[in-house]
Image (cartoon, rainbow, N blue to C red; front, side):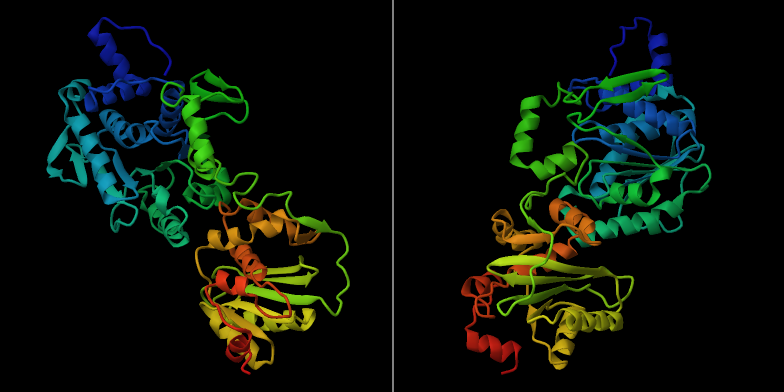
Length: 490
């Protein structure tokens, strides 16, 4: 925070704290953590300024992305409701976090702040009511409120003027697709509708970035024009001019630290070297890095013209099907490969959302087009049924039971990319989407194409059969005879 002169007159100091939100943040810290030194910094002024723009009605949708341990929850979930209720005791807040325990803790901190004698002296008209003062909610005598809820908590029948979503998902859950999608679904289907007045109500989302498809990622992609974004990476990656007050700006040069007093460069660099993907997301607010954690952009070779199919060419199709048989489900993906001279040529990619009848028709059409020697299908969801149908149609189809997580399966085959055994076309209509996913994995938004690729590359071909190593990779160590008896019905 910008250094301020010491004020001797307590009445002047009270007036400053009462009217300047950045000063009130320091006041709140001293009330709640009197034994902990307050480290002021310009980023606190930047956050305070943007929140004041919300309070004045100039901003109605605000995203704040900041690294961990930078006071974001104290500022947004504790100090802001207390400050706002001091000026407008009838205001109604809903404050949401990833867990009930965290939501209650932040609510208790706000209650403690507002019950303090120093706060009551600043804002004598903002008094907590005895009629409603519970662990999850308190009200003012003028019917204002601060309600605490978890992201999974019920908001049925509840509404507010301001909704603050503070850390809606735990970092450890951010890579779990189902949890991440549930959080996003709750926001779009429930939280947005809880504003009492959609015209004047405000929503604030504050969090560290965790994944390309976390809540902030979805909001920026789907509602980008509606949101003001304050993103504060730990180390500046570009020159920035960040507003911290009326006609006041902080200029960051490339390499400048966000708060060197709290996190010096040596600590940041140690975190970056130990967990580069986590650092890129949580500290730099950039969850998808230019180069993926596993597959580097310059590893695959490129071909201009696909070599003609010869007698020793093995054609493999690899299907990763959606978990449900509806057109609104996840993507189904088929990658088609030519294997020759221990090299894998990616020939074609199909990626669509399809209901089951369409999926079956597309699979048969692709088999007719490419004449594969073998079709690999993940043995899960609708893939199990599709594998059976293609077998009944006379196609050599293998149902695969994947072992290990997605990252582990791709890790096994990363050396094929590094050794230049995988060749991508120089140009193709589907190439850009595939490269974004492949070179961003495991931080990319989708991974269905990656699953199809790792499944295809596991099919180590010698004489059109699985090698021992490939079978071990899937935990299915069978002999050639048993392989054909089980999968080809011989």
